[in-house]
Length: 110
Image (cartoon, rainbow, N blue to C red; front, top):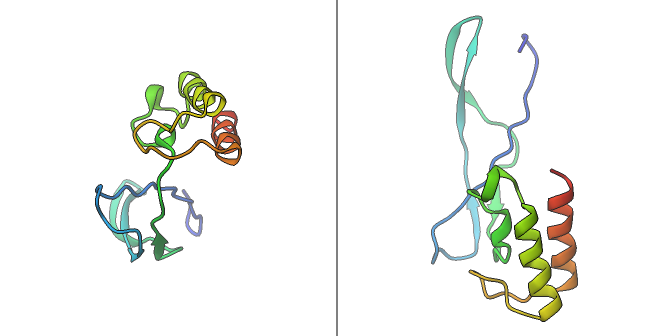
């Protein structure tokens, strides 16, 4: 990167099971190498709060197969839940048409 450049950092926040669904504040710093010099404590700018809501989708979690957001086999499992009106594995949530569309979208954008 050159002076004045910026980089967008995407991150996924996972919280321990049993934590309450609520609004949480967070902040962070990153480190980078600039001209072969280690620069620490660069403030992360952007949203400083996050609202935790129900995680109905186990297929888009960190550690997904093949390091993809949603794999073909995970999409097939989601379709099976939707067609057969089976609760979603791991979360027990209902697979609605809107949720099915979201899983398809996540699979397509990779």
